[in-house]
Amino acid sequence: MTNQQSPQHRPQGSGTPRPRSAAAPQSQVRRPATAGAPPRSASGSGAQRPSSSSGHGRTKTRSFLGLKLLFVLICIFISIFLAMTMIDIFSDLFGLNQRDRATEIVVPEGATMEDVAVQLKDAEIIKYPWIFKTYAKISFDSNAVQDGEYTFNSAMSYDELIISLRTFRQKVAETVRVVFYEGMTVREIAARLEENKVCKAEEFINYLQTAELDYDFVKDLPASDLRFRRLEGYLFPDTYEFYVDEDVDTVAARFLNRFDQVISDSLLDRMKEKGWTLDQTVALASVIQKECSDAEQMGMISSVFNNRLDNYPLLQSDVTIFYYRDDIRPYLEKDNDVMYKAYSTYDHEGLPIGPICNPGLEAIKAALYPEESGYYYFVTDDAGNFYYAVTFDEHVVNVRKAGSSAHGVDVEEIH
Image 1 (cartoon, rainbow, N blue to C red):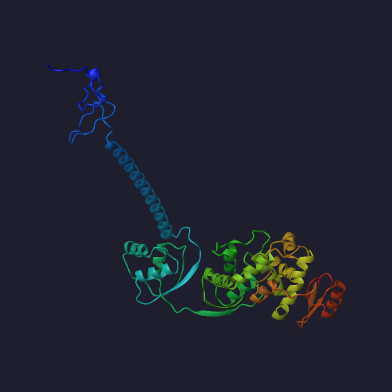
Image 2: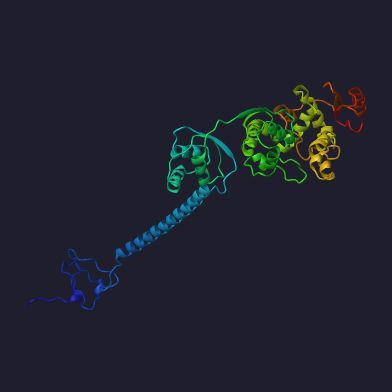
């Protein structure tokens, strides 16, 4: 007879597994994993974990959108670049928005249009030599150029440049060497140019008054209707060589380029130290130049004017009156009292409205580096002797000693 034990009294240490209830939840049943079978979700037998392929899909989508955006940005950048390049090419082709500066080049015998295109590029007349060469070939069906000396301007169109290069006939250019002294006015310089058959005086003066010139010092000139000659003071006096019947733009460029060379950085730094502009410096230098042609005396003359600028309201220089009398009034239809007072340092406080002549380098340096003195007056006689004084009473004695033709500071009122 077999002995049976109730399940309730089964020994706890028995190795026989305890039977599971049929009603036990399926989630509690552990089944051995079948090789190669995917694991089931903990949420139930029918549910599966989200596939990792959906995350990769979103990443790919974002990457694709980023590439599209980058492509669009690159296309926009290229479009802007091409548009700006085309505008620049058309400006170069037609000579639009180019600086107005004349340049001389020499085309050697046997040169081709390609050779000249490189010369024009080096001289900053054109920007795109390969376009220039191609345009010349297509438009004029020729690669030939005439050798010779040319004066070109960067404001000229390709057509103007090419026509000049193809039709120009070299001739033996007659040149003339002309000396311009320190203290000459624009009127005197123009007259000397005409005397030497360089150009017409009136054309030269009109060009200086109206031309748009690519110089910083011209752009910085103070605007005033009372300034009679716009570039008085900026035609640097020197010895120049010109062609007979030369264009006024290249004639003016020689003077202005030389002035630009002479005004060094050290001189500009000194102006900043004194709190002066270039135009103020040139104006004072022009007064010193007219009052004194002796470089050894310029420093002392400058000290008188610098002392007056610091302590007196008026310079009272006779030569400022002479400038209106000789270089302004004869060319006005009627007297202009306002302009007169703008130049006269007996009426206008401080410096005149503009330079009264074209000073040399020594006068410019003297204006910036005056001698040390306590003088407020000076006078000079016909023999070139200078008399300096601290007080007005001393000055009156010196004026009488210098004679009736003397000039200097506060001489007109004494006479």
